[in-house]
Amino acid sequence: MRIRETGKITEGLWLLGCEESCIYLLQGEKESIVISGGIGYIVPDILRQFGEFGIKEEGITKILILHSHFDHVGIIPFFKRRHPEIEIYASARGWEILRMDKAIDTINEFSRRIAEKMGKYELYSKFDLEWRNDISGKIVKEGDEIDLGGIGLNILEIPGHSSCCIGAYVPSLKALFPSDGGGIPFDQTIITSGNSNFTRYQESLEKMKDLEVEYYCADHYGYVRGEEARLFIKKTIEMAKHNRSLMEEIYRLTRNVEISAQKLVSSFYQQYENYFLPFEISLDVYRQMIRHIANVIDQKA
Image (cartoon, rainbow, N blue to C red):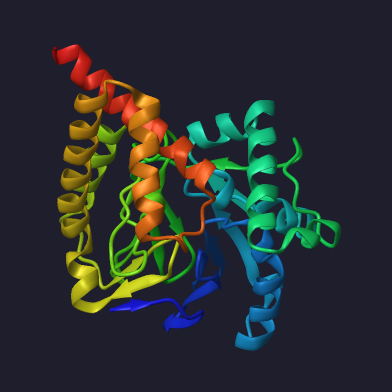
């Protein structure tokens, strides 16, 4: 079952944000952590939800960045500046990217572009949402556990969607937080977004497939629970194979990355016009994926 409404998921776990940009609050006996960083324009939604759900903002002591793309780090600057004592966690590669001037410029540019698309651009004059060089934190890696007191969060390295992508798993809740390193439960389909390296993306899916999952907590379009959650990674593996075959087929016909990307993105938006990303950002994503597919095909030729 797919759930997109914000609120309590189970004891100690909350979905916050909005349908297209989700973050999660995990509460332990001693500390609480926000998992993922969402899009910047969800800040007022989160502040409102704190009040609606009786969540104490000052009780949040940690935020975990699952990867460094603009739509997954947007709330970090606001909350880190508002509460300097909050500890921010990310992978080593994630922090490397987030210290690059070019990456920061891209985060800010894309964040403003999508806020404008969603009719929320005015929030940039009300809240300090821009990334600058004042954000730092701690490194987490495969096998690390973040202990919140009575509940632990295990870190998984799952590159492929991005080179810095990590996931998190809470064994006691059987809750998986794969970010876009897993499938995105959009509409009634599954979006597979192996942006930086589709082969490694597929390998990361295989790595997660045997985890016991009752709650599949996606960064976009809510969470999945029950039987569908238990099968979600395996279905994502099947969808990734299908989508890879489609990209391979289009590229072999065109032998041109740009034409292939244009064809695939145009077809996607004809079917799913309400997907949150602007056309031109999705086009960048497909260019990356097909460029990798093309390299694999051309090397075998």
